[in-house]
Image (cartoon, rainbow, N blue to C red; front, side):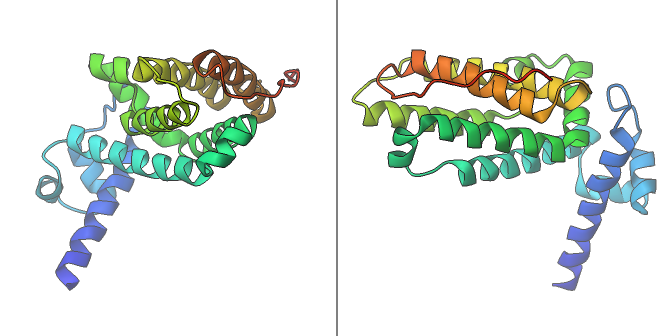
Length: 213
């Protein structure tokens, strides 16, 4: 058991060191040797835990997506409440996304730089959070079924919503003039309109005006 605990600690140290080394470096330029040195282990020890730097970044992304999905699940109420107050649901989900992204800002920067440097078409098409797309697809399809509707092209619709949320979220994270209140108001207003088009039988309240910030 002690050996397993030490192995887990070393793996966690390598992931933390990679995050520190890769933030701010275009394409994640830090070599494996520097990551190992920052973690306080030999370069050979790195390869005991990860086949490559890309494999380490992939595990960081898996950790990120697991935590992100859990945060959204916590914000998602029962179906009856979601049908009764869709605006409140959008508000909670949007706020959860913005807050989680802010907490994980450095990690997001690493993922975005990494994907851009590799020219990863899959990442460009699917985004960095496919499990979140799965979660939202299931949620929208469940709401549609409760309304007696059949939702076609649900994944495309979800990717459209996520694309909008991602762009607004990036402005919030990396543009100083965008406040949380402004980003949240935009997400609420645009999402309400989009969801009304996707699920026309869903009762929606009128969104408020976007605050100027």
